[in-house]
Length: 432
Picture (cartoon, rainbow, N blue to C red):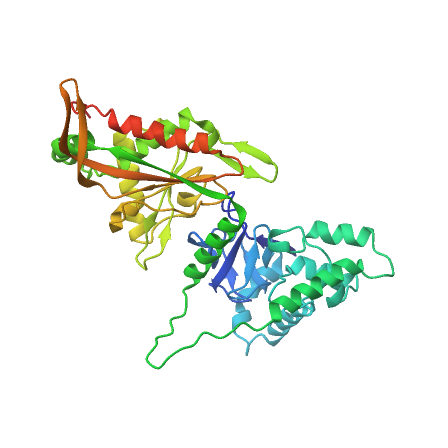
């Protein structure tokens, strides 16, 4: 009888972990290949994890609300052999007491391997817990090991490295002192927030908590700076007004301003490739593809960032269809994990809410994000060969946040100046 390890699949370069929201199968249930076993959630999208094999679920290594790392084993499925075929009747405990006993023993064995406890500031995967048990590593000793994983978590390699150099003495005292200091800081009670009579206490949603963590982590990671520029979009306003009815009749799509701006941004990224990068430690990853993320609202008010892949290779019609499709499926909660992966630069439209500008937070691991302000009719000085005069123009602000660790002010400013020049040179007679 074979044992298949169901692992948390990779869901994109920026997704390192997920939260288990519900188990769709119980221990002892029969599972078919491609059948969903559990539901998970990341800070971007909810998804299901299917089984890769036919078999019977015999172990669940995590519980609902546990955070799981990509690549961790989350369940054990037994495959092949006569026992597998007979196992579905395990659900009937009265008629199959021996089968029930086997399953119960399996569950107890799984529980026994989790002798190490997680704390508020330290999470250990089942693999690390098993290694600690097999090597007789105590909770205190494990807590003192320096982790190289996300948020300082101990990985398999950390364990192997520690075991290789392990002596009868515990980990270096300095690590122990750091751990104790960290625990003391975490356990220090925070001053309670005063709640007056009539105040309403609202629990943050799971996605709200994940987004909050992602935003704080981004600010702590990147050196955020901003550049702002005002753009005259009068020609674009008048052109769209002239062609949108015919466009909608011909393409069956509503032509908004967003795809027009996305087209210009994609061209600017092609001209300034060092804005289309990610920072990996001390190395820069220059992205080949230009994949534009666009912040879209979910029904609960939270924002999600679906991605237009290879945006620079699409014409305005193609970008319009992509924008409308992703926005529609975001509103209907029908986005798939692949829809929100692989973004290399992000655009958010704060003008939708009436804001004329904003200072958006970078969507890690990218190095830049552009906020589109509201389009307003304003008095402006218009230069002509016959002299200057005051006229009514349609204008908007572009707000560019970028990571000053790798993007200097010259590049950050040149990038939005390129977009401005592109938009202001729009041909009012352009055909679509």
